[in-house]
Image (cartoon, rainbow, N blue to C red; front, top):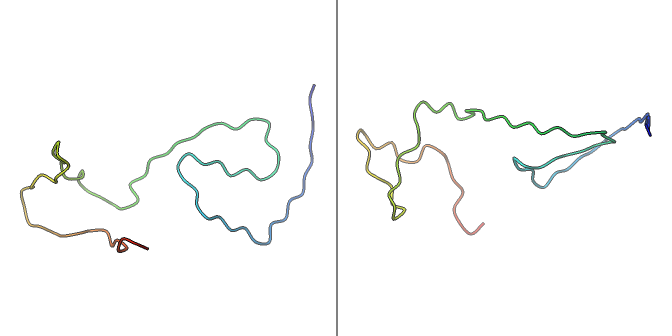
Amino acid sequence: MNFYINQTIQINYLRLESISNSSILQIGSAGSIKSLSNLYNTGSYAEPAPEVSASGEQVESEGPDTGSLVPLQPPGR
């Protein structure tokens, strides 16, 4: 059995609290949803992250210490 659905959807305001890599936002009807996953270097990083030891401590790398490259919010927010 085939269904043919014609829809007109007008969204004046859409607020999303959060959406993650595995989330699906569906507006309207879809006969099938095909998964798609893309990985982008949005931070323009030129080298891999530093190594971590088995105890969870960061392994000292060679070269100058640049500190935190990403501004982070303080905990307890």
